Amino acid sequence: MYNPHLKAFVCVADCGSFNKASERLYISPPSVMKQINTLENHLNIKLFDRNNQGLRLTAAGQVIYRHAKYLFDYSTKAIEEAKQQEQIAATTFCIGSSLLNPCKPFMDLWYQVNQAFPGYRLHVVPFDDSHTSILSEVAALGDKYDFLVAACDSTDWLELCNFKQLGVYRVCCAVAREHPLAQKDRLTIEDIYGQTLMMVKRGDSSAIDTVRDEVEQHPEIHIEDTPQFYDMEVFNRCAQTQNVMLTLECWQDVHPGLVTLPVAWDFAVPYGILYAKYAGDDVLKFLSLIQK
Image: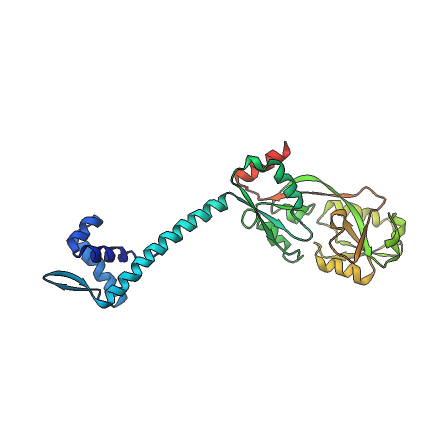
């Protein structure tokens, strides 16, 4: 973390001679002299006055000596702190969390098995649910995050990570609070006749494609394709346009202006823990424990 010749310089200053410094450094006196000459040339500063009585620090050398001692202490503390942080990082699980993909399901599992991880701590890492950047967040598993918890049936997502299913979320519909359908307790597919139904385009989620197969048998429903992955803008559009939006039961509190309603069908999307393709042993240990 500092010029290595500084060590020889401080040693010579402390010993008062090249010979004594060479004994302490376990190198020859000419090697010590060479290091001092190299340092003086590098700094373009004369560090020692040399005479028959020995060596003496110049005024400039005294300044370098004082700051070199400080630098050594600072470097030692920096290295110790870095090692401590390395140890903390090695015993910390980083959990991604967002509005659409909150980490609470992970937390519920963690407190069932955390005694098997003495000294471990959790660090929640927030991220944005942007349909343009969500793939990069998933790809960060193993680096930025150890775990994400999400509804996941996306082919693109599953190419980037491993997935351990915990259960399923029912597929529902959401409407604005002032929408006529908001007064119902439960919808039938016929209730959506004459409406525009917002849903992700076909091709990435087999579960949602199955819903689309059913909806397309009802030409009275107009389908509007949304971005491939939902974000807050999709929820805002539903609230602002009075459209109906395909959603999941777990997202019922995402947008305060929307009401989430169950539908008389049996469609669901799996949810669970996403983790890196090549996960560490502690991640795999956690997954094995929750499976038991």
